[in-house]
Amino acid sequence: MQRHVILVDPYSEAVEYAHAFRKRGVEPVAVLSTPAPLKSYLHGWKPDSFSATHFHDGDFAKLARIIRGYDPIAVIPGNESAVRLVDSLIEELAPGTGNVPELSAARRDKWPMAQAVARAGIPHLRTFAAATEQEAANWLRETGLEGQALVLKPRCSGGTDGVHKVEAGEDWRLPFRQLLGSVNMFDLSNDSILLQEFASGTEFVVDTYSVNGELGLVAVVQYSKSTRGNRIGVYDAEDYLLPEDPLVGVLESYTRQVARAVGIRTGCTHTEIMMTDQGPRLIEIAARLDGGCGQQAARLATGDCQIDRAVRHHLDSVFVPGYEIVRPTRVAWLSAANSGTMRNAEVLDGVRELASFQKLGCRYPNGSRVPMTEDLFTTLGWVLLSAPDQDVVDQDTKRVREIEAKVVIDPLGP
Image 1 (spheres, one colour):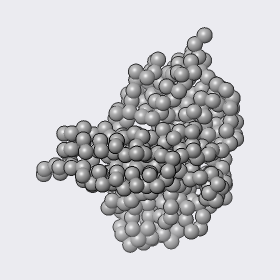
Image 2 (image 1 turned 45 degrees about the vertical axis):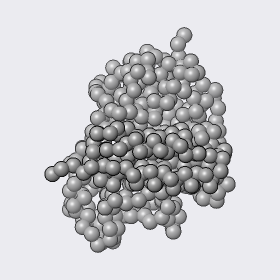
Image 3 (image 1 turned 90 degrees about the vertical axis):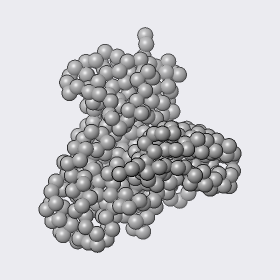
Image 4 (image 1 turned 30 degrees about the vertical axis):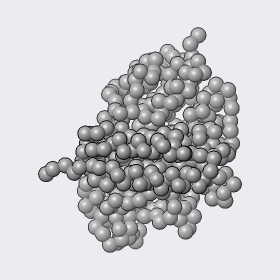
């Protein structure tokens, strides 16, 4: 009898779940949590990768009946947009086997997420969700954050979409007005805005895979980011930390606390943490796999990844507590300094000659319109580098930046 796995919102790299399960004889079925594919993810929607696709039109009982008919071995989220629906489907089909259902909102919405972390007594950044400027102003006054550096962002988006930094002394009202009522990358209206004290430090990602409440460390990554105007989410590079690095133990311990606070019991998490002078502080935790080229990079760096662990969990009942580094690996992100028309995309092919080159990701051909890079959604692309020698990776990174500087994007006319 054919076995099936249900993949909810398997956009972009989450499509690799389909390939990995199919190699083990399990047919992947896609479920989209929306009546049509999300516009911001159309480039990453690959319907031909699935044996069937179903859309959620708001009738949960109907969808649950369809999914039950497959008798799936698992229901897995491929994106933030899938988290709440996956929680509901698992609780309907196999009660008690998923993440804590009562904390579902804390795994998707950054406001209840912050509240859950605070209730657990975990060191955290002061955070508030405001639906009006007056609410925001009152909170800033009451917390003593008036005139201090802040971060404003949507409650239910991702990929640094809409994240704005307000410098100390600057007026937060303009970005607040820009965000309030706007539609984010998940086609959701930003009816209230998250305000958060700005955390200075180095940002890390802790990727995990949990089985029956046991959290296993998949990788710890250090981000390098830069700012462009008041946008602070411009990705530059990602590097993997050795498991014996003292920071890994600190970050792992903190992640375990956060995961418990938001009810993680099974599956992937992707946790962003700022290491400040006062210790680790949560930026956000997402109950899904690391996207972008994260799975490919993790396989090169550690010989393993979250997708591979999911397959072994559901088919072999395997749990892995930690990771190792098998070779130096880096993701070098490419940025567009301005919006306009791409004129010489072929120049990026120069990275293919680098000794540590593994893969180039850029979806903008010549003549296409390119947005100015302000966040992960508007990045120009990425270059995946990996080699036995860290010096080779470092030298090739410099060459990537030289090639990136040759990209010509003609500004659009008035």
